[in-house]
Structure formats: structure tokens, C-alpha cells
Length: 129
Image: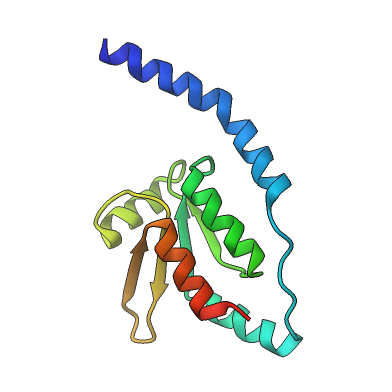
């Protein structure tokens, strides 16, 4: 019975994934405009950030839309299909849960921020115009 239920949800995910990704592309907001100097500062600050995510995760889509709206060049790491990124997420953050924003501190330590609403609040506080 358990195998049947798992198989059912895998099929549902396979069917819904393309629609979710298309909807993301169509509904992603236009990025905000900054002065070139301000955008250069934002670009430099984003070098310390990495988003661990799954492509079709609705919470990851929510975070990616906000990243696009804020015009942030944050590296996106696919923890679903890349075993190295999945291992980094588990070793550094303590669990494989997405979305997760890795924030590299000046001292070299990393902070792992989970929960889409917390990530969005952090990004808005730090980068909103």
C-alpha cells in the first residue's frame, strides 16, 4: 500500500512540475531598478549568499520570485539533483530541507536560514530599496 501511495504522488509531481515552472516564469515580477553603484554593492553582497532549492518546490518558487523582484544575483544550488549540494546542505544546515539560504559571514562561518518567509524577510530587510 505504501509503495502505491508513493508512486501516486510521484506521478502527480511529474505531471504538475512543468505547469509549476511555467507559472513561475509567467508570474515572476519585474526586477526593481537601482543606480549602477547601488547594484554593484548589492552584487558584491550577494557573493556571500547561496540558495539551496528544488526546482518545483512551491516555497522555493516563492523565494526565487522575491529574489528576481529584488534583482539579486544569488547562486541557486539544486539540492535535489546535485548530490554534492545535498551533502553540503545536510552537513552545514543539519538537515535536507529547502528552501535554505546559506549566508557566509565575514569570519568565514556560515549561517543557514530555513523557511521561505524568513528568507524573504531577511532579503527584504537587507536589500529592499
